[in-house]
Length: 331
Length: 264
Image 1 (tube, chains in turn green, red):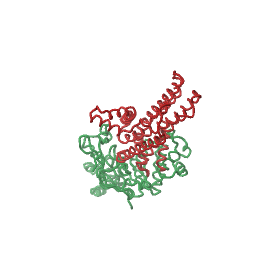
Image 2 (spheres, helix red, strand yellow):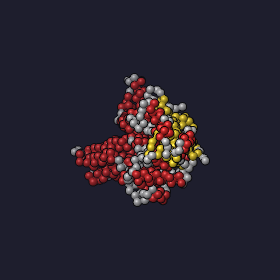
Image 3 (cartoon, chains in turn red, yellow):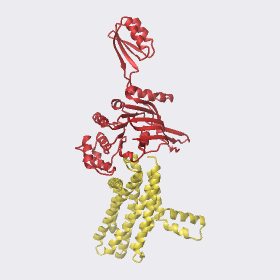
Image 4 (cartoon, rainbow over the protein chains, first blue to last red):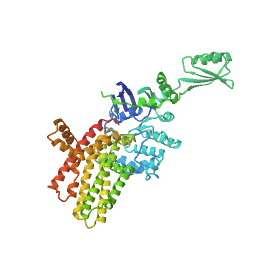
């Protein structure tokens, strides 16, 4: 499988007021395969948008390499084959949906009105294409954004919070569109806080925290059952009490059945044997798939707790301290 | 070229809908329209004063519009993130900057045309006897030279906007315009005064040469005073055009070089 994006030790640093150096993105190694939906996750200020900007060539990396569709990030020719939907995009309000599309179409050298209309139809804006953008709802504006991102039939799409702030219906529509992109063979790089969306649609994810990748891999593998749930019948109380002493294991009884939630370890077989030997019957033994939310919190909170910060309770000052780089470091 | 034209066209569309600019324009048009009613002088003096007053109104209004329009030209695009969508297309930064500049001077041209048309109509209606072909020529030539002046001012402001905040840019561009127009004669006097210390004169000469001289484009005196004539008019205007184009080019090239390296 060819790579749509490849970065090697990609770094972006800024000088701080005190003369120090703040690594907003630190030695990032990413490999995004062609044709996959890749989720790029991280808390606010983790370096997600900075990474996307570097991959688009909008800002220069301080160090490291970034290849996008086989060419150096920022190569103007690559821009003919990719597209970008920024977070909370703004469109010139005096223009209609169709005019916006025609404007972006013209940036590729030729104004293709028919294609613009077809794409607006695809995102269900056929009846609204002649209304000005200031009459559009947030969801409609996002759909215009997605439509403009398809103007060049891109091989690679960068979507920054594509479902952020949308109502449930618009949310589902946008999510379905992204799935259609994959079916068409496009590579989609999504930066998002909507973990449920990412879990549903992404093939692989990377979790970035404080500019560093803390998890990366296939979603199925990352979320694969590291725990199991066991249900057994007719288990003697004495045996069950013995299981309670095991580390990281919860034991409960429901309608007389033993239910155990435990790590999938080398001891699992021994537990099954012990139940059977004691006359118990194994009803079910199911590997438990972790939730992305748990994986995310586990990945980002470990580091944050070191500094005494509670996840999800970052203050504005915390964010500003992370997001207000002062001077770019040139190397 | 297509890319630049389309960015310019969109910029014009946006600029002519900006309420703050329309209010300034409306005030300018209103003053030009009511100017004849303010004059209480003799017929001959009245025409001279009226021409001077209305041209002055157009110059002042245009300068304010030029600065207000251009100081937000680039910062707004960054703040609203439109620049990211545009630069993620096959658009180079210099194309974006030139497109924005051309759009700004295009919008400025439309606004100044409206003021000039108002001026001509006002003269035609209020002073039908005095509005000869010569006067009409003067009433259009004056604003035309102001337009060239404003294109230069817009280039100054676009240059500053590539590395400063709008509020700082407002004062920098406004200051440059004031020094380059109102104080150009003062600077010239200082630089030619033999009694002043050399260092003092050197500073005056430096400012005089480093900043664009906006006063060159103010041809109110020869237009208003029948006694003053521009020798070899064609060559004079050609020189002015060359001066403006050279300065604008230098400013835009400087702006592009800075903007190309700037983090957005």
